[in-house]
Length: 509
Image (cartoon, rainbow, N blue to C red; front, side, top):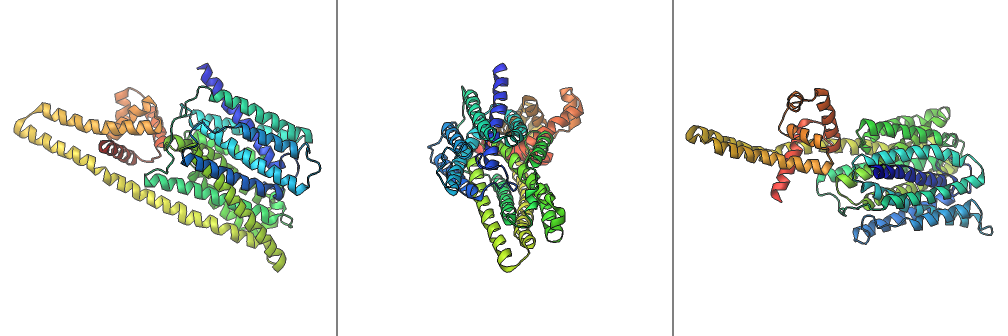
């Protein structure tokens, strides 16, 4: 018990220190600058950083797919060394004879490599936790630690800005080594789930976050050096970080440890569409509000996606290397594309006298609207169709039951064999029970939740369950909500269909 608590605290502090060091590296270009325009510190630093991140993530995904990287085998120490060297080169100016662009290139490459490896290593460790709630607690706690420490590191003197992150990442490495001691890493699948709805769910989550990252890149790069730079330049980066951390915390509580990115997109995308559509008309009047809203949405989606990666790794039994590598590599590619498009828009505005805000609004609105209208809506319709198909597929189990019931009637009226009736009823119950066991195991249900799932699979009401288990109806509903959240369903019919499908799969094995 004490060891478990100590390792949970090690996860909170260790991941928090790691995120703090990486955040400072990102915002200060490895301690070399102290002014930024939103997320942009130096383009000459960010471009090689994103290229290095994309290359590193691709290599990790490739290694996992080929079986060369098993869970828990990726080492953090090269990344810790790279990040420390980057801060020494950028902040302490250990390479005084190197031109600024060359120094930015070196620091960017070191930052991209180290941030990708460290994030993936931590997410892999968190996904291997035995307790279902532990990863969420540690991620939320780490985000709070990051929110508190980043302004302290960035807002002080130059020595503190490059010295503190080095200390932070070294302490984080020690805490991670302690946390991994004795940890068992389960083998994970290296292929996408065979179930079509689950594949579509993954594709939608990744598509939305990539589009949002690209739009953020377009906005930031397009306004650099223009009279509209204040849209993101006036934003104090700690404010959206604090707001996003609070929102993510509330979502984790409300969603019972499993906030889904799609629920964030359904709020963020319409909000962004409204704000961006006002840019051509009220851009200057809106001021930093535009940048604040965009950055908050970006931060929230990024934070929730950390929870989503760990949840998918556990729930779908997928390699965290694949999930985290795809997220970090895809985000780097999307941000690179956004930076390129933003630079083109800025050049068009200067060369042809076009309104930068109008160009920016169109370039950002179309991809967001496309994902919102044709992505979220279409997937939602397909999910509804899949639910109907699941219900129909459950007919096979019900047919078995009806056949048994038909036999029951025949036996009752012709032979009156009570023993045979009871035997066949037990067959029906065993079919449902096997589905309940599968669903409970796949989704990490507690003993009480698994017990209540058995009642729900048989169509029992909350009142019946409360009376049979001698607990309050409110307690039953609380457990039911947790079961819905963990299994990703919204109605009892969907839950019953899921149990029936699981039972069929087990019978076919």
